[in-house]
Length: 478
Image (cartoon, rainbow, N blue to C red; front, side, top):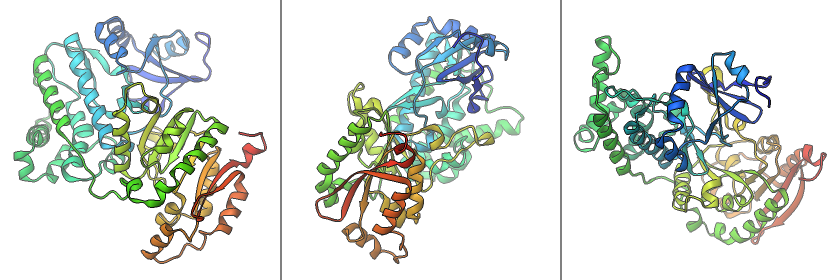
């Protein structure tokens, strides 16, 4: 793309808050326009040892100056343009597991601890400044880095406590999933509200509860009553560093063990899961070899065994509604070498397909829905469809129609009514699922797909199907 000629360029809706460093896209390029003031910070930041260190460590998105779209950006008040390496799949904090949010928080603190001695600071402290490449968090908001005044407050402290610390404390101390809270209020959990959920024992005996939550909340209320901000006292760099170290120690001490997960030990307790694993693995591998997907969605991924197979061909979004399952998968990935294929390519996300992340924020465009952010080239739907129909009450035809709307080949595992799992599910509820039957499945699949491969699993009550959308089938083989 030539400099100044960029008819496709447009601002990213969620970047309106970054007035001095707005993000825009032009084709496949992700660019950031800097005002004169922000450009001055970049000229100091780019040659610094601090920048080289965090870039080499993979802690920040690779970034360089660019002449592309310079005319377009200059006309809008941005004399300097940066180009970022594109993050293939975006995710939001309410889709992360406990350890994902904690690792992003620890990276936020680590970056500040490195920035302050080097003469830099960060304008804010929000999880939206980070994205995951595989299972590795990375700072994407380069514009949040700025020059540090020797005496000054940490402006992002309250934001950090409400968007990082409070959700993690709620999960660790109270066994309350933070995802619905963050999805319902993108600005985080108000400290006043979290204070009301803590007991006097929490405040007295739990590290950080009194200072970072209760006292912080009360001081902010006093300052608002006086007509001031959240705090105006100047703090030395060392005082801020001490606070950062205390927060880091607190976060590292937080643990979460799920107490009510139905699926965390699925492969250890479900006899059919281990019995069919080898057959399903061969089928998935053959499908990947045929399709060669650069991006796979693994729906109901559980431990990610099939995600790891798909990762041999490309990136994988491993999706599951069970928070504990995603937490376990993420921790297993981060336990691998940083350059392992699975860790680099698999991003686990908490996602209930019957209630997925919607478009949110200003004009419903600030944070996009799952389908607007990502389009798979292969979909794995193994041992899941009966849970969507009988567990979540979805209509079989609707589920098949939705899978077809993704416009990608689908590996589907059909579980017949004679299967022990189905019989057990129907013992717990009234059977109103007349649409869940072989005839309805065949009719729905026939309307939307062509069956490329079909394999009956040992035991006789489960069938694997490789389905090709009819629109793709008419245009050629996958």
